[in-house]
Length: 92
Image (cartoon, rainbow, N blue to C red; front, side, top):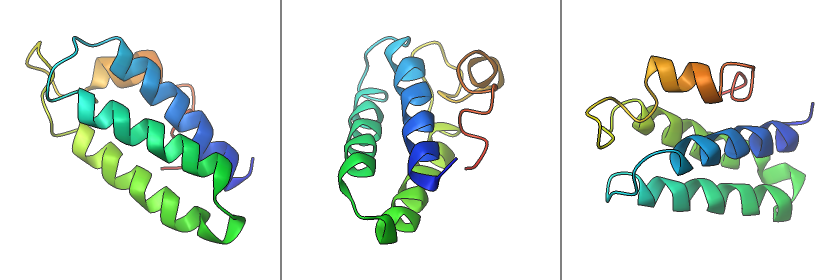
């Protein structure tokens, strides 16, 4: 799988995860960020994919720290397992 495909796949999983959460001010900016990264993965040239992958890594790191409305980290263990465990974001 190419880096472009990996980024798209991870973004798809993250969009599903974020869409499953209550829409709060802690979730909405990341839903937008993930959407922008996915669009960029479709549009940017191959030589910029490493830059885009780094943006995605930063978002993933932040999602492990930011709390959702239920008090758990947005990217908590159970949510990771449900939406991303199947290797969706394994490259990041």
